[in-house]
Image 1 (tube, helix red, strand yellow):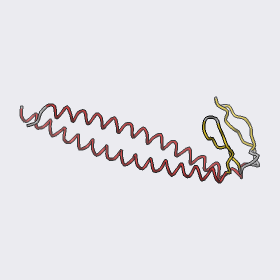
Image 2 (tube, one colour; image 1 turned 180 degrees about the vertical axis):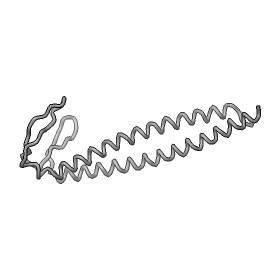
Image 3 (cartoon, one colour; image 1 turned 45 degrees about the horizontal axis):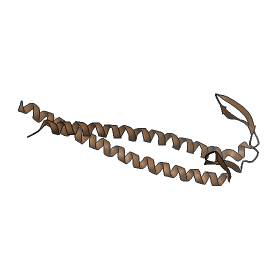
Image 4 (cartoon, one colour; image 1 turned 60 degrees about the horizontal axis):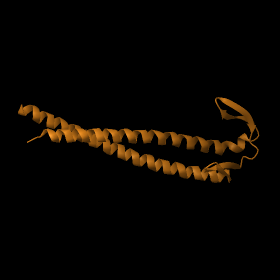
Amino acid sequence: MVEGSERINIDEEIEYSRNLLGSVTSQLERIQLAMAEVIQTIAVLTELPKASSSEGKISIGSGLFVKAQVKDPDTVIFPLGSNVFTEEKRESAIEKLNGNLKDLTASYDSLMLRKKELEGKLNALGTLYNQLIDQESKKQ
């Protein structure tokens, strides 16, 4: 015998799973943006020695730039947090960024698995919900 409370429980579970799926999808998007930024930074650091002899521009915000020239392409300023910075060798910075990229990739892969699990759960719940509706309509 199918009870209305069972359908309500499935409704709640579907809603909960949809909210989780939305959250996971949002996290995946943020990780993708972070990965793209890290990849871009690694590319810039890799090409930095070539750029040291030419003049470039640095964004200062609000769409404004200043002209600049890299004086020491083998050293970069690395943030530690709370407005504290340290100098690092370019190669060391690239290694750290590659480590960050590896961690981001692992997080992304883990979240993709979670997303697929949630999508599977939602499909199963949808099927179960439809079966309950069919059973209720046959009783009436």
